Image (cartoon, rainbow, N blue to C red; front, side, top):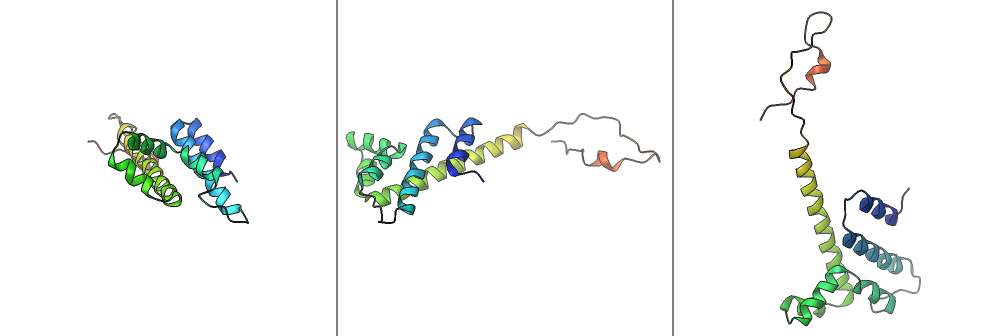
Length: 140
C-alpha cells in the first residue's frame, strides 16, 4: 500500500498536479500527521505547524493581499489558524477536483477514436462478427 507522500510524488511525476500543488499537499500532510499522531495534542498555534501553514500557497497569496490592503487578505487572517488550515484544504481540494474534471472532459473530447467507414467484417457463417460490433462509434 502506498502512503500519501508517494501518491503525491507519482501524481506530480505524471503531470497530474503542479509543483505548487505538490508543495501544498506535502505541507497539508505534515500538518495532518502532526495533529493526528501527537499524543500530547499538537495545536495550530505551535511553531512547526504555523511554519507549515505559512508554506501553503493560499496563505502566501493572502499575505500578499494583506500587504496590498485588500479585503480578502484581512478576512483570511481574521480566521484562527485551524480555520485557515481548513479553508486552505477546502480550496486546494476544489482546485484539484476542477483540474481532474477539466482533464476528464479534455480526454473525452480529444481522445475519442474516429473510425473511418470500413467494410464490415464477416464471420465464418457470412454474418456480422460480434467482436466488431463493439468497435462501432457513433458519428458526430
